[in-house]
Length: 246
Image (cartoon, rainbow, N blue to C red; front, side, top):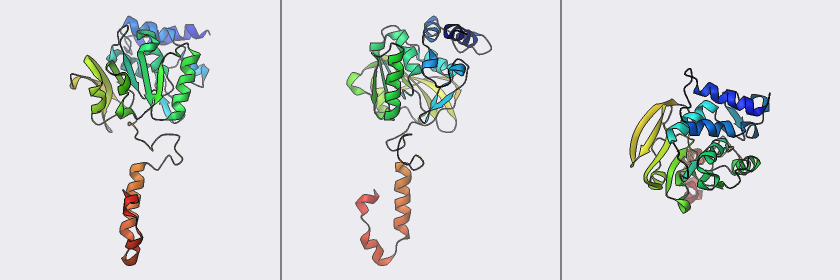
């Protein structure tokens, strides 16, 4: 079956009352335009409502992407920042709505940045800027943004991202730890809570999927170093370089 037909079937199912994920014409038309099979390895299942794993990240299921996009409510010509670009699918849908030059995306994992750039180029969205950055820092060089979308969970809305919103702007992110809620943030405060979600936490430097030792984070390394130091006795304490333990 032709990909265009599969895309239409996918969006039709997301608009159906049984799912009710897509409500606006803008999101509907954009999702019908972006060839999702360019962003996943399994062409046959690209238009099924399921998530995929790629390069250590999760490619969101279409229904999850739709929930984020509807909550964000981007308008034509809005300036948009996507934190957690991943493979670039949600970024491409946003580019269809606001225009590729109005979309900026960042990801902490360099391999994903390269992958997103290639995927976006293959779908004629190469004008989107994708950079390797720590998500919590945002992309202040191009701020302010009318809309900021975070595709990773945080305990609190990152202050830098809130500060990079334009007046009247909106930030959408999964808020919480084990129990998460999709929220919108406006004027520095949570404006709406839009139901439960389950996202991976926002990573810090050293936790990327392409680090040498994926199961050892910087935070864990510091804790291991502290425990090892506390086990030493007597003269061994003199050999500890305490600056390296911090």
